[in-house]
Image (tube, rainbow, N blue to C red; front, side):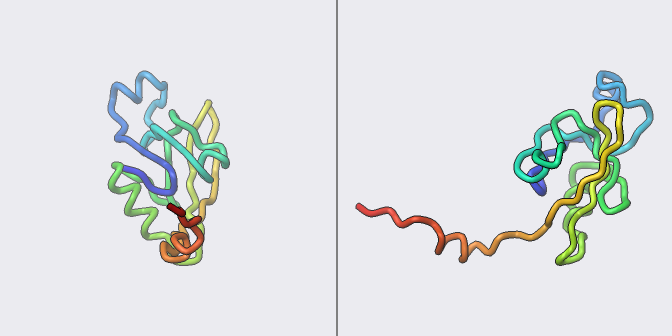
Length: 108
């Protein structure tokens, strides 16, 4: 499941043990791109909360991001390299029509 440039997977017992996550709950980041990566989020991070709520599954992560009020940034707390971090990411979706108009036209 991917949202905000963040792809997450369910945290299994094997992953929890392999990554030494103890009893922390959340979803595991398998890939981060764009603003999420620029803010320091990377594969192997454990997302602990989105807007104060712990995602219990990849689908739950997506729903928590979608519930971010319009015009506000999603507040994501994650555990990585033995430390807790917090970032805020915009949930604004670019206007597709505006993007299409801005694309260079191919000339044949």
